[in-house]
Amino acid sequence: MSGGRQGSKHEPTRKELEESLRAMAEAESMLSQIASTFFAGGEPRLEQLTWPDAAPAGGAEARLRVAEQRFRTLIEQIPAVSFMAVLGEGKNEIYVSPHIEAMLGYSQKEWLEDPFLWYARLHPDDRALWNDEFARGCRHGGPFRAECRFIARDGHVVWVHGEARVIKDELDRPMLLQGVAFDITESKRAAEVLLKQAVSAAKEEEELAIAQRVQTSILPRKFVVPGLEISAKMLPASEVGGDYYDVLPVDDGCWIAIGDVSGHGLSAGLVMLMLQSSLLTTVLARPSAMPSEILPLVNLALVHNIRGRLGSKDHVTLSLLRYTPDGRIVFAGAHEEMILLRRRSGEVELIETPGTWLGARKDVGRFFVDSELKLEDGDILVLYTDGVTEAKNDAGAMFDMQRLVETLVAVQHKPTLLIRDNILTAVRNFMSRQLDDITLMVIRYRAP
Image 1 (tube, rainbow, N blue to C red):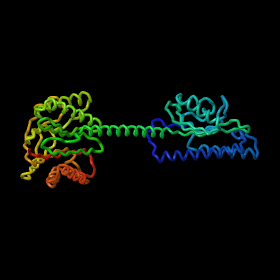
Image 2 (spheres, one colour):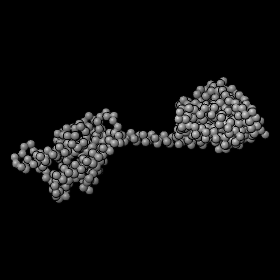
Image 3 (cartoon, one colour):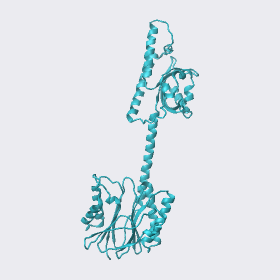
Image 4 (spheres, rainbow, N blue to C red):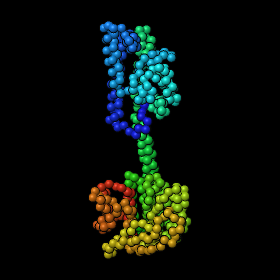
């Protein structure tokens, strides 16, 4: 048997649990010594267990009293309930230690006077388990053990770990049950906490794995756009964010998008999937539209899904670019500044992307304004998410725009694939650890 203190908030440490296990082992050893003392040679000497109030004088009786006192002292020092019971219907226990009152609220006297009290306090849902284990122990001569719940006097549930063995008479018949019971309520609670934490961690890991698959599966696998050499890559953080980029070829050039979902995990992955599908559907339906016309339509779909279906407060920052083979790019949307490196002059231009978030509110059309830039042969356009510029080192300093531009300028003559990889390597070497997704897209224009 075993139980806990009502209202206890203490969660046992691993050391405490190990100490409890050691105490159980020591208690079982003590009980073995007790059994060998009072049942020497396999022949029970029950008269020694009756502890009469008055006994005839004499050396035997004196020795008996000394043995009795040693027995009680030994038993009552064990940090558990120890017991001996006669195996017979309706017969009382011979002994139960005083610890029973601390465990279940019933006094030693009450427990010994009522042979059915222990079964009455056994949790109804655990009675079959107890009976099965007890029957097995009797068939095989023990030992048997079980972890069951008992209902204390005040009604709270006590988890009890019971260990017992059968003492037989000279004819090998079961006669006495000798055992020990520990209150394991706190360890059970600790186990429940650990289980809940393990289940929660497993669910979180599964969610992150799903989100990462969603996040990476919707990204384009190759770029085939006349006049453009494109290299792009996303490095997911350990905790999935919501970086997104896309290249959607159409008859007269392509659409280019880069953005970031505000949330994390599976929710961000779902929003990215919604963004990609609604953007693809809209630009294919209206390939000649301007970015400022496409974005409000995509926003309506996102508001409906994010706010209405998911019940989320996430939003999306997005820049949408419409490229044509003559080098003309029309763009709209709110995201990070674009970097344009002019091949002819070697100058770097930082291009703002005016607009507003997507998915936060319905009426946003007035905030989107089309802007335009013209690429010349060899010019390089760099798009990125804030995971690049906001990557931090051990001192808390950010990689920032200056480092990004300096790295780009240093490798500008390389193919876009190597430019991309050089910049990403510089960011990874700079940061102490990755806290956010990192996305980088490098585009070089080749005039026809």
